[in-house]
Structures are given as C-alpha cells and as structure tokens.
Image (cartoon, rainbow, N blue to C red):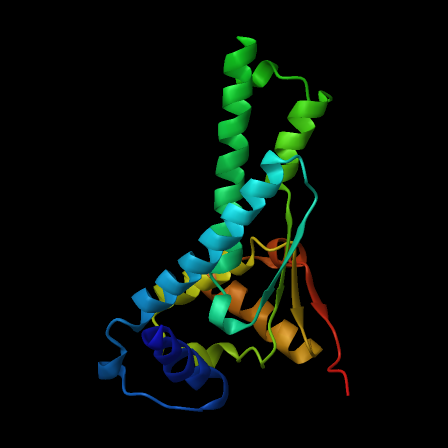
Length: 193
C-alpha cells in the first residue's frame, strides 16, 4: 500500500540515511500502516507454513529482508508458537491426557514442536543507526521493532559496525544486560561485489 511506502521511506529511512525526511506532524497513521503491512506479510507466510505443516513438510527457514519487514519475525514466531501449542493441546485431548504428559520423544509431538522452531533469519541491508539517531521515532515503536527482531534465530548485517549498533540499541531500548545481548545471534556478511 502507498501508506506503507510512506511509513518506510519517510519515517524509518529518515533515521538511517536522511532520505525522504518528513515532519513529525505528517507521521499520523504511518506506524499503524507499517504494522498492518507487516501483519499482511506475516499472515501470508504463516498460512503457507501451516499448509506445509498439514502435509507434514517441516523444518523450514524463513528469510526476512530489510527494514520494511522488521516486525515480521516476531509476528511470525508468535503465530508459529501458538499453532504448535494449539496442536499439542488437540493431540493431548484426542489421547485423553494432560498436555504435560505428552512424550517428548513421540514422533507426532516432535513434528508439532518443529512448527514452532521454524528457523527465521532477518537480514538488514542498510546501516543500522546509532542509538542517538533513533530519537525521532517513539521509544515504544523501537521496543516493538527490537523485540520482534530478537525473535529471529539469526540477525544479519553487512558490517560489524551495524551489528554493534543493533546490540547497543537493544541495550538502550530493551534494557538488556551483557549476558542478554551475548545471546543475540547477529552475524556480519560482507557486501558482495
């Protein structure tokens, strides 16, 4: 949608490269449009993964690219966990046992749990800004973005500086300590020429 383009290029990219600057007064509706667009992508991916899991086709890797979709990893992970939990509850009900009584080594239980462990990789193709540059976007929005990205199995950047900026932002906005940020699985991949 056009509003999504406005949200990305005018608000988020402003923080990265000062491209398409926008006045704060013009931001109304951009964040909601950004979230809605991310929801649409997450919904489409989720429906496809659900369809594949119904056919017992499991063990997927989802590759999410760039700042336009920073909320997708969290949205998708939450849906996959819910689907897995719902299916485990249904299995327990059909077997007439408590969900905690399901055997972890049971093949069907493993298949259901594989749904929630779908690998999500996020690649950030533009510079991740220094924390001070994030001041124009409300803190709640950055908390939501960073929380979502942390639900990825791996977060990729082109250079160490951008990865370090991401870690610093998570410390600042999510109030993470050293041991929490050490668990972040960020990786650097050089830009191919």
